[in-house]
Length: 297
Image (cartoon, rainbow, N blue to C red; front, side, top):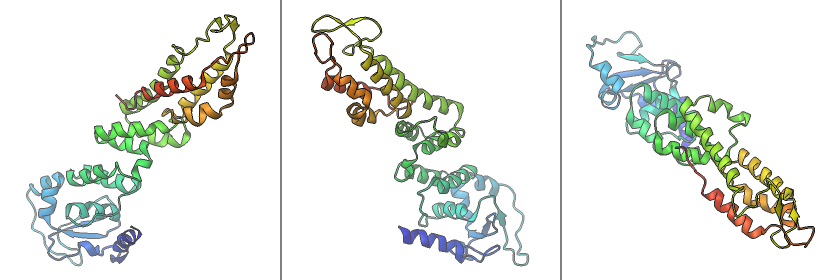
């Protein structure tokens, strides 16, 4: 894979700089020349552009002036706003050439923007198929932003599930969250909050003890202070707030947290009976977490 990346870099380096042709797009058979913002030139066939791009199809439906070569500038040169790597990636896709490595959002986002601008459904479908593969899945929040922008519902649902490992309030996510539309942003925050609050309410229902008032030991009937369970519930909810997936609650959380150890060792001061069934409690908490919603609605 590294060799492929090096070859891709060399394509740019082999072009003759500003005003020079890209080596993959320099055939004299092409009747249209596109120029990147660095003035790297790409010679392609107008037929290819017209059949793969709604933008170019509309442009060529207008009356065209006769093209004549002028100095060193090829006829029909069209300068665009995209840089050379973006234009190269886009043209590789529509011309049937091997595509460059699309394994980083900084690479695919400019290509998507250009494909949207020029109404090229082909490149967008290629990128859409690749965004659900590693390593792009390693940044689910950015994937979610892209999927919502382009209306990719299935990918947005999947990305929302992967974001459950993230704390949306962490400063490093602010920039990506600011790119989201209002509906997409609210849906994501609602998913994270619903998981936390649903579990919070569930931990007050049977078979869990209710620590809101006076309760008695099930063995001897004497009053019991269930403060250790109350403290453990607080720790569980705080963990869900920072990592809504909840996978760290049961392990290592309920095994290693000081609040968990205190809860499992708590006993009735009258009959010395353990107050909480550790195995049952952990199993029910795990089941509660597994039943929580996993994607945006």
